[in-house]
Length: 374
Image 1 (spheres, rainbow, N blue to C red):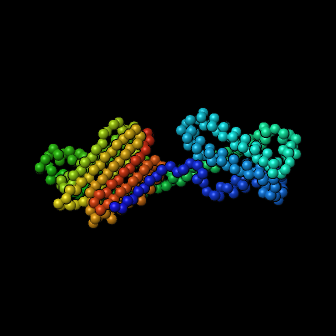
Image 2: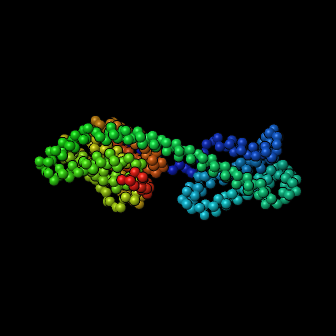
């Protein structure tokens, strides 16, 4: 069995930063030292080739650690979860701890220079707390700089993602106009309903209503970035029922969903549909063996779990990963743009079975202006 796994998870929140950050902090502190000394050569010499190097190294190391601890631990755990009081308390503790550790650098500098702390840093430097006058505001400045850079970077990434999302939305709409209104699907569905009119008028009427709802959804109700989850699931159910007619009882289809209240959650249109269509398109066509499709949806609070499995055959297994006209890469790209770090996708394929597991964290549905006017 070969396996294709796509997993998106939170990156490690500490120590995973690029090496160029180290010279950045060195240059940053050098510029501050240059302002204090006034001569670039003297500043470089005293910073890198004197006993003062130990003190400056303490600034570089402990302020950098404080900055990254704030960016990758305190902000995600407290600030982004609206636990502002706890965030301010822990941020203050972090700054005080960093400043205290920096203060020890002054004593180490004097130790390695072989002189007293007052001789090296002046008569006023006789107490440990005296150095807070420099270490504390310097640490606050470094933390502010780090947060400013991080927030600016996040803003740029958000703007870039929004532009890509808008572009992707336009491209996706064009693709779905060509792909969703598949002539084979339309004509086969109409033909199936036509033959049912004489055999089972009630079923034909119900199927025609489902077909009408399917077209209405594709034309009018999927133009927003998100729609109520209930509408997407209703669309899936209608699509599955129509596909059952087309399969002529050659494929056993099961769809499980214990439907709780879903309209308070929103979902991007057609995110789930791609995987369902793929199952019907690539299900096996055995005459002697069973052909089957199993679809299961589970909603736990705001996490939606989708499981789809279908029988397949070695002849078409290579085509399964292409996902028709949309492509697996485009599906994953939409997920990356719309649900960054909020989904987990795992795909397993073998010679006789194809499985998809999608875990998706949904957000509360916000009524768009388009739907408000409808």
